[in-house]
Image 1 (spheres, rainbow, N blue to C red):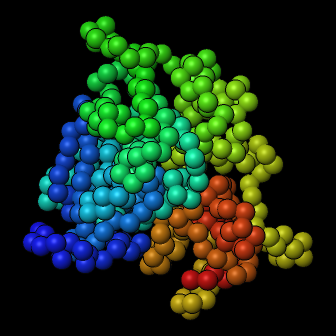
Image 2 (image 1 turned 90 degrees about the vertical axis):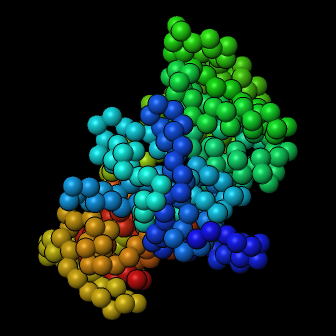
Length: 371
Ligand code: FES
C-alpha cells in the first residue's frame, strides 16, 4: 500500500496481537554482521507496542519448524514500520537464513507484541540503559521513544561492543546524543583494534568503571540486555555498589530457559502449581486437557510441553520467548495440577489467579483451561 493522502494516513487501524503478515520494505546493513529489516503490515496497520517488547516469528527452513523472538528495535512513536535488528549468529539456524533470504518484498508472519521488559510497565524517572552487542535493540527502541515523546527524560546509555566495527546504530546514537538534551551516551570497546583510532572508553565492565561513568547510579532505574555472562557481571557490580536490585530489570531469550530452570532447581526444584499430588491418586502419565470456551478436548502425556500440544491441536496461543520469561503464552487454568520449570514471566497476581505459562508447563492431572 502506498499512502496517497493525509486522511488515509490518519485512519489506519491499530495492530492486533494475533498473527500479522508483514512485508519487508527496506534492509539496512548496520555492521558487518548485523542487519535491520523494516517491515510494514500487509494490510495497513499501526504497530502499537511498548518500547522493549518483542515479536515472535515462526519459520520453516528445510522442512524444519523454528520459533524465534526478536526485540522490536523501532519506536512505537513511529508506528508505520516495524524494525527488527538481527545479528547473524555463526552456525545459527535462523539468523543466517534471515540475512540471506529476507529481501525487500519478502513476506513473513509475526506474532505479538509481548514482554514485560518495557518502558511503560516499568515506571522510571531517571534511567540507565546498559547493553552489550545486539542487546542494544530494546534500548534503542526506548531511547528513540523518549527522544520523540519526552526529550527531557534523563537517559544514560551505555553500550559495550567488541570493536569499533561492531557498533550498531553508530551514527544514530551520535545523533540522539547531539539532539536530545538529557541523553548521555558512552560506547565502550573491549577490543578496539590496533588500527582503530578509538578515542572513546575501552575495557570490560567493572564496578569502578560503572560508578565512574554513572555517579548517580543508585538513583536510576536500570534496564539491561546482553549475553548472560555480561548481565551476570552487571549484577555483581551492582551488588558491590549496594544498588537496590528491585530497580534492575533485564532481558534474556535464553533458549529453553535453561539457566533459570537450573536456578529453580537449586532453589528447591521446579515450581508446582497446586493442588498438590493426592497420595491416593493412581499414577498415570496420560491426562485429559479440556478447553472450556471452545469445548475442545485432547490427551497429553506428562512429558509433553503444554504449548506444543496446544499448537499441534491448532489452538492459537501468543508466544514469545518459549522459555517462561516473557509471559506471552499465559493462560488461565481452571482446575488440575501442573508443573513448570520456569515461570519468571508470571506476575505474583497472575500466579495467585491460577494463570500458567504453557511454554514451560507439564500436565500432572486432568486439567481445564479457560481457552
Ligand atoms: S512464550 Fe514467553 S513465557 Fe511462554
